[in-house]
Image 1 (tube, rainbow, N blue to C red):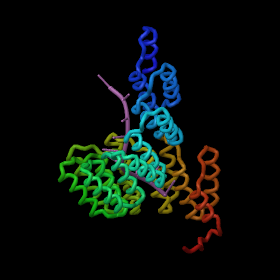
Image 2: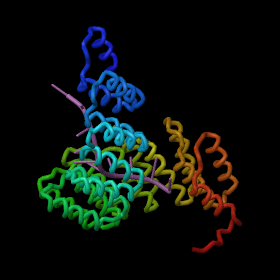
Image 3: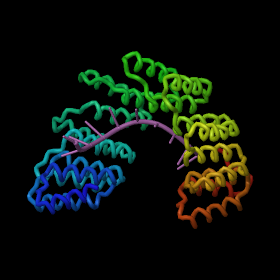
Length: 352
DNA sequence: TTAGGGTTAG
C-alpha cells in the first residue's frame, strides 16, 4: 500500500521527505518486509535525507521480531556511525530481544551500557528487566527492580504487575501472586485478560484447579472474554492431574464459545495422554489435529515418542522418528533421550 | 500522522 503511494508522489513530482520515508519504512517493518524497508532506507539516503532515530528503531524492531539480532545490532551501529543517538526505545528493543533469545548476560550488559551513558530508563525498560528476571526464575531480583522503579518515581503499570504475578507463579508462590493481583486492583489498575491468564496458568501449574476455574468465572463476571491461552492453561492443569478426558472436553467447550483450539491445545492434550501412557489416545488427538489443519510439531513428536518409549513400544517410536524427519521436523536432544531410554534394554532399569 | 513492555504446549 505504502509503496504505491510513493509511486504516486513521484509521478506528481512531490518529493517525499524524511517523515514520509520514515512512515513507509515503519509500515514495511511491521509487515515484516525488511528487505524492502532496507532498500527504502538506502533510497532516502541517496536523496540526501537523514533518517531519524524513530525510523531506525522501527527497523531494529522489525529485525528483532524476526529473531535477527545481528541485523538489529547492525542498524544500531549504523545509526551511531551516522551520528544519530540511540534512544531509550532503541535500548529497550535490543534488551527485550536479548531476553527473548535467552541471552540474559548480554541483556544485562546492555542495561549497564545504557546506565553508563547516563540514559534514563523508563517504565518500559523496568518492565522488560522485571520480566527478564521473572523468566529466569529470579522473582526476588524482580521485586528489587520494582522497588528501584518506585524509588525513581516511576509508577508500576499493569504490565509490571502481570510480569511479577507470572514470576511468582513460576515459583509456585500462588498466595503471593493472588495478593499481588489484589494489590494491583487496589491501586486502580484494572486487570485484563493477560493478567488473568498469567494468574490462572499459575494456579493450573500448581494443581489448584478449583481456584483456576473460580478465576475464569471472575473474569467473565467482569465481561472479559477468555481466549485460547486461558483454556490451554486450564487444559494443562487438568492434564497434570491426569484428568485428560476432562481437558479434552474443554476443546468442545472452546469450540462452543467460538474460540478456536490451536496447536498448543492439541499438543497439551497429546502430552497429557502420553504422560499417562495412553499413547493410543494421544495418537487419536494427533489425527484430530491433522484433520483440523494443524501439522504435528517437534513438541507433538517428542510427546508421542516419549509416551511410546515409556510403554516399551520402541519400534513404533523409531517409526515416528523417521516420520518426523521425512516431514522436515528436526529431532532435538529430548527426542533422542527418549529413544535411548526406550530402546535401551526395554526394562528401564536406570535409576536417578 | 513513524518506535518499545506482560500470558499457553515437551
